[in-house]
Image 1 (cartoon, rainbow, N blue to C red):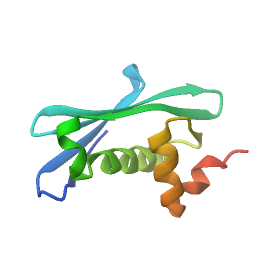
Image 2: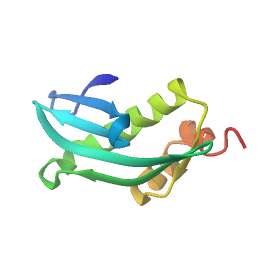
Image 3: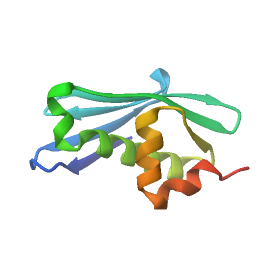
Length: 106
C-alpha cells in the first residue's frame, strides 16, 4: 500500500505500509523521513513509536503519516487501535473522527 499526499510545501509525501517490519513509513523525494512502528496482538494494533526527521517536523509530515496509517487500519482491518505512542494519542485526541478506532471491536 502506498499513499501519495501533498504536503504544505507542495512536495509529495508517500506513506507505505510495511507489514514485515510492523510499521508505516513516510517517504519524501525518495528519502525515508518518518516511521510509525506498531505491534499487533489479538484484536489490537498498538502504535508504539512515531518518528520524523527533525529537519522535516515543521512540514506536517508526522500528521500525514498518522492520518494515512489510521485510514489504512480503518479500511483494511477491523482491529482496535491502541495509541501507546504519545504523538498518536495526542493526534487522535485532536481528531474526533478517528476516536472510534480506539474502541471498535470491544
